[in-house]
Image (cartoon, rainbow, N blue to C red; front, top):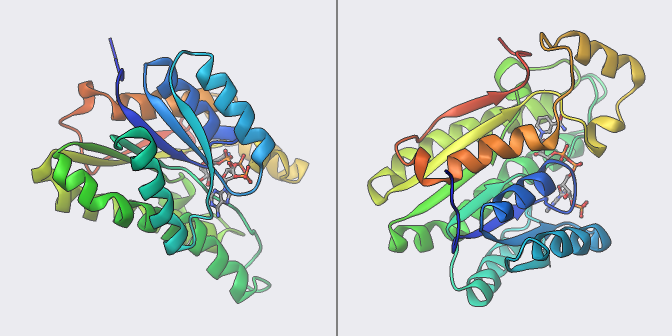
Length: 248
Ligand code: NAP
């Protein structure tokens, strides 16, 4: 039985969508959760209230993870408030889709800086803390698009593929300190991000899923909770696809 009682988790992008489902799942297993959001304070406060109703501690923090100084300040504040960090989930992400022909350089950079550099900033800011603790769980939310590529998402696929390289490299660096670093690669999950896709693109995505249904945030949260648990203590540098068979 997975038990995260007494553990402190930081989940970036947990005001809504997959991150919120992850935050609630970790809290349901006993973890205290720092809810990180970009600008949506109302949604973040809602998540905090739902977590507190589960009987654990929670607090919302506004932080643009693409800014290294912001990430460093955030980590210091969370450690001061919660007494330490045991679990870091790098989930914050954005899309700015388009064919390379029309993709602006700034749209490429922006997606890389939030989705890939954001995770690097959070890992760099918590690295020494985890080293000293000789314990930690880092879970990066990649995507099946980072494994297979996707027309119209060169920026996003590059960031998500980069996250896999980051995951495996940091896993090797921190393994001796008993810090595991893994990635979860979701397929097509029903959230605001996919809700804004054109109807035709949604139909094509659904048709490509052998299980013939879109995933839910909870599907991803279950895999993250497992990787965060003691039951997964010998798993590191792994990428778990949670996609209904989309990327088989
Ligand atoms: P979402 O519903 O659009 O939510 C995005 C979350 O990220 C929000 O909490 C948002 O905060 C936060 N965020 C955005 N930019 C940020 C920044 N610069 N700094 C800090 N937080 C930031 O997205 P989602 O669908 O749940 O996706 C979550 C993760 O899963 C992303 O990394 C995404 O790439 C990945 N993923 C999603 C799918 C899918 O099908 N949905 C598939 C594969 C991978 P605010 O609420 O304040 O804006």
